[in-house]
Structures are given as C-alpha cells and as structure tokens.
Image (tube, rainbow, N blue to C red; front, side):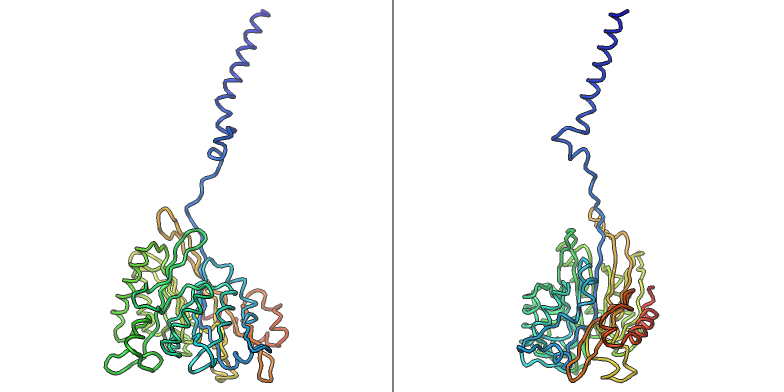
Length: 401
C-alpha cells in the first residue's frame, strides 16, 4: 500500500509539472510576454475638429495691441478660448486680413502686424484660411507675404498659393496618423466681361490664378474644380475632407438660397464637413444627409471670432457682429476600413468683450460657456449682462443644444 501511495504521488507531481510547463509559457514566457498579454490596438480614432470664423484687425484693435516699445502683442485676445482650441486635434481659422507689412491699417484695406499670426499659432490654430474678400487688400505682393508669414509661424495654408501649380488644399496629419485635407474658397463680386473681381476690384489674371474663388453665376464650374481637388487630396492619402466657404450676405442671421444650394451640392461630393463665414453674424447649422446616407455637418456662418464690429461702431442693430462661435465636429474614423463611423457637431458661442477707453481698449474673446459668470474680463468690464444676452441669442440660432 505504501509503495502504491508513493507511485500515485510521483504521478501526481509529474502531471503538475508537465501541466505547468504547458501552461506557464502561455502567460509568463519572457520573450512572448508582451505578445501574449497585450490588448490589441483599436483601429478607430476619435477626432475633434474645431473651426472659427473671421479674424479681423481694425484700426482700434491695432491701437489696443501696440506696445510701448513699438511692437504689437495679441496674446491677450485669445486668453480665455485657448483651452478649447488646443484641445482640438486640428483647429482652423479664417484670417480675414493680410500680413502685407507696414504701414498697418484696418478697414477697408487690411494689413496687420506679423505678431497677430504668432498669437494665432500660440492660441493653438493649425490651418490658416486665406480665402476671403480681403485676401488681396495688399495686392499680389501682400498675398505672397501673407502666405510666408503664416507658414513661418507653422501654419498650413488653404485658399491661396504662391504658384498656380500647387495643390488647392492644405494637408494636415494628426498625432494618430489621420490625414485631413482642408479646401477653402471665397466668393467673387460681379464684374464686366467675366473678369475675376474680389471685393469689388478686378484682379489680374496672374493673381486670379493664385486664389481659390468662385462666381455665383458659374458655381457648377467651381464645384467641379473643388471635386477635382477632393479627388487629388484623396489620392494623396486624405482620410477626411474639410470644406470652407466665404459666402453669403453680410449681417444676415440666416443662410440664403445660394449658401443652401452650394452646401447641398458640396455635401453630395466626397466631403465630411462644411464650415462657412463672411456674414459677420452667426447663422444656423444643420446636418445634410446625402443620397448615399452620409451625414455632413454644415455651419453656414461662424460669425466674427474677433473684430471691432459691434453695437458701438455699427449701431445697435449690428450688435450680433460681436458674437461668433468655435464650431466643433466630433467623429470616429476607422483607419482599417477607411471610413467615418460616427459624426456629430456642436459649437461654443463666443463674444468679443471690449472695454477700457481713452482710445486704447482691451479686447478679449470670451467663451459663452458654464464659466461665463466667473469670467474675469466680464467682471472687470461690467459687461456680463451683454454676454448673457449674446449667449441666449447664439444658443437659439445655432440650434444644436
């Protein structure tokens, strides 16, 4: 009996040892440890894309940002919105001025100090939109210098090029390796004999070839060119296509028929979202469902991000020029399947707080969010009631809350 027990014990030990040798490597083998225990990486990437409307620098703003040593600083303008901008995977802004060099002037022929570009980069913007009705305020020389200054501050550019052979889009790659292409176009003003006119002035053929512009009277031709640019961007590896239009009518609270028609036709192309500005007022938003079932968020006008347009300068009926928004699109992108699997939109309304006096104001873009009651610039200026009113109007108009 004793010998039998010994034999049973030996057999049991052998079974345990063999079992350990079989099982142990699956979990603890040093060479295979990472491969056996690591969780597979997800191919689905969450992205946040942020865009703002018109960045302008009127004469009063230039006076406000002039420093005692003769330089300019615009950092304080973006103090309260910077956290939102830097939180996005990619952030775009419409630079509705030029960096044409001194003398620096505001409306009607804008040329801003280079320090504005530096402050925009510091605020967290990645792509600068140059397609707008003030892009040629300093002519072709100013167009080139604007591109150079923006690129010198790390921006990708869409809306203008230095050589007509350059792509008509800006390509940006996120930290997750997703490529986004942004394509921006501005409207032309009517002219005789079919010449290209921007902001009421006919431009040379050489200049016209360097800017992305469209005529409302020949919109299908432009949409065909945009479709070609989309195809080129996709061929270069673009996963997401962003479209921006400088369109519509100034000081209108709602998109017109042209905007809606262009948005509908653009959505049916291979695009993922549409941003717009120029009216200087916020306008409504919507999600267009295409014939294939794709959902395309549209912001018809993001209003002014910063300017000196306001009730004090334009009259009480133009008070909505003080309000803009940080438009946001949230999406999930499946890198393996190469498709957007989910998309949604929202916006953080903003209000330009101007206060002080003696010809030198302080300008601060205030996010109209849950912290509005504690915003220090509103407390200092006594303008909290105006910001509250702007918040209520913006929320009602945007219609995405």
